[in-house]
Image (cartoon, rainbow, N blue to C red; front, side, top):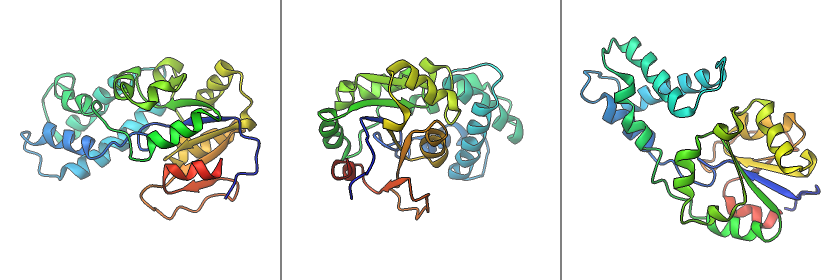
Amino acid sequence: MKIDKNINHVIFDVYGTLISTGTGSVDATRKIFENLNVSDPPELIYAEWKKKHKMNMQSLEEFACERDIFVMDLKQLFLEYGIDKSAEVCVKPMLDSLYNRSLFDDTEETIKYLLGKYNVAIGSTTDDEPLLSNMKGTILEEIPNVFTSENLMVYKPQKEFYQKILQATGWKAEECLFVGDSIDDDVNGPLKVGMNACLVDRKGRGIILDKNVLKICELRELCDIL
């Protein structure tokens, strides 16, 4: 399959797309709650934490870094569970879990191929740190344009996130392909500003998308499509 559009620029989400998150978040949740007399499985607690995180991120009246939103989430969870502990202190395992994450097996070959043929950028909902640390010593350091929610001061899937990338690069939206694993953040958001979109469905969720949206199961498929 070849894409029948004039794509000159490829913008990548990072976590879940280029870098694996593994079980780090659930493991961190387990570590935080294991001695707090909470019987709920950490997978269920983290699922609720993730929902609160997304909601808090999108309801901010003023921009806040993601590390501060993690504290906000945990305060709310502690309140619901009747836990009288400092969220600012207890959140540390979750923040630590954001570091030392590894590339997916097909990331290096794909990025190396695309860097020689396209303008490549990163567009990620994350703070500058831990992203820059996770990129260090990898092929991702060769990507010249790195945009985070922290340096853009806005979160996906708000239109301003993608518009600021276009303003900073001077790229035309219709010549951009946004690649990521989230329908809201990496497909619907980019489409709203006229970008093309590609969903990376590594887990084979069987998601049905609009015919104009690409869907791949492995990142290396881009080498044949582009």
